[in-house]
Length: 113
Length: 111
Image 1 (cartoon, rainbow over the protein chains, first blue to last red):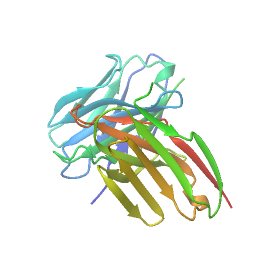
Image 2: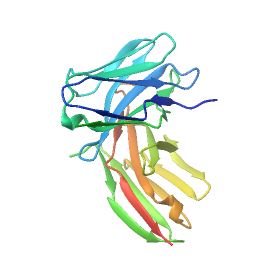
Image 3: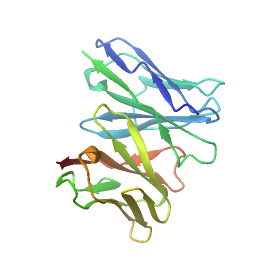
């Protein structure tokens, strides 16, 4: 069974631009969570989607948004990029009722210049 | 105070040494993860615990729910064990899929 995949793996953007990152969960997994990792703050929860609905959102500004499609693939979008948005963005998928058992993707490393 | 505290922050060991990394948490949890992150970023889940002890090869993870404490042990450490080890908890009764992470322990094993 294929693991969680994220695209692109690396991305360089300029301040003020917007970016869309994609996550394909493990087949059969319908829950997708997104996390941001920075050297200063470590790993922080962004949001979680299940069955195309956002179930929970972390403490991030409205510039960060996401969505989930009917095939459980998820995207996250960051608008009006800031230098501080440079980070590793990880997604993780899990089975319904087993959200404690998350499988991580390789991450997308975003650099904002 | 962080809800999940790890110690030590950095650890250097000689090949073959027994290593212990500690994790304390202040919230009620339904599960605790030990994660491994190599340079380059990819995260691998080593263990998921809700009670007791688990062993996989040279890695052992224990959890004491009453004391809100978990340990990750590496026996006969090897340079390939060099990585950042992260403790993460799923807050009991909290929102599903919302892991709370420790800051990580950077382990370097010298040959």
